[in-house]
Image 1 (cartoon, helix red, strand yellow):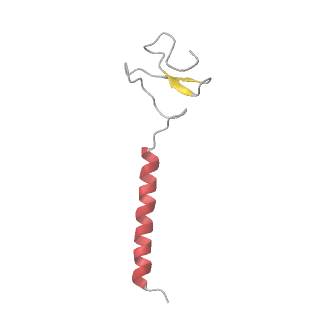
Image 2 (cartoon, helix red, strand yellow):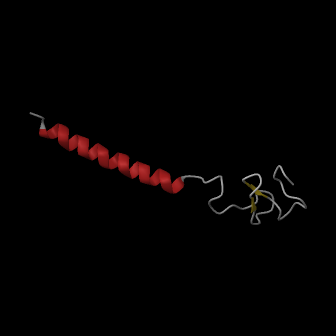
Image 3 (spheres, helix red, strand yellow):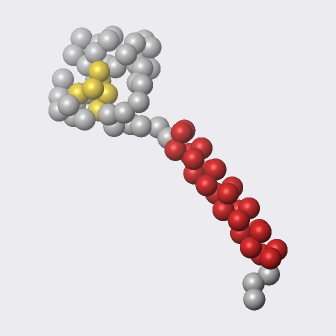
Length: 69
């Protein structure tokens, strides 16, 4: 028979793990196509380049910062 203390500790740790997973999902950085991206040079809004599949700084650069521009 399993000890009740063991079961209680297992449930406590499970709850902590689930909370940590939930927090990590909130803090996750979306690099490709999701999220609110601002330019690191000027602070303006970056545009999504569908050719390169990356965010491109067309706000302060004439041609953007992606590979295809």
